[in-house]
Length: 266
Image (cartoon, rainbow, N blue to C red; front, side, top):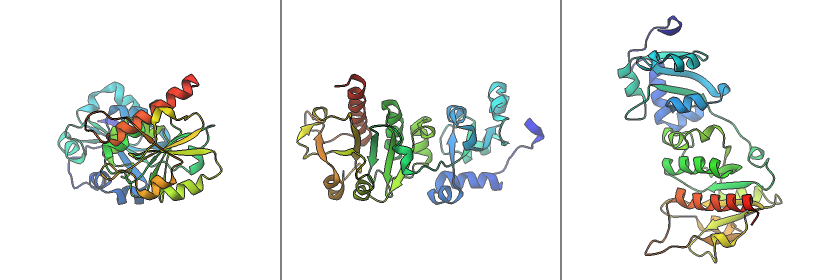
């Protein structure tokens, strides 16, 4: 046992009960300004100043290399049985990090010249949100705007989907797309919406200047108000009887086309 601490062996322990609350309730995460991240990778990549506390299972405590890193932070050892029950995943990896929620302002997303932005409207699926964040980092996006009706970005399933990108891609919640458009007025950022009514194919437009891609709800797509706020409606060509793509897939196609143009200059 490290640091002379006793092992937590009960689900009734206040710390364990609080972790379960953080896993399950967005309100608790907002009030406490904390969220959880499971797994070795999420712990190892976490910025040190985000880490509130680390919880390890009795089995993982035998990993001396990992524990040398864990010991730099406040930590608790938890029995394997309790650890499995407090985690959000079916097969936890034996380490859970409680982290302080980052606080960005809009300017954090606009620092780069000709920013490349994602704007998510009412996106509900945690897996999609996490994948868009992760893909966005790979494509070099400057940041992600989310409307208030989107899934909570600190939802454990979103966090898992980001595979660590949550630590590096700034995000900012806004009321809705039209209000964001107004806030960015005069900043030289064109809004592009993937839409069935789009005139041009997505690869026919230029994204080398400041660009923002609008991605709508998985079932309903973009609202009329959001589509009207777009400077340009674009289409992703489809074969067969497919009408649209998964939100994360569509976002990935658009982000990487922008990345390609910026890399090649054409």
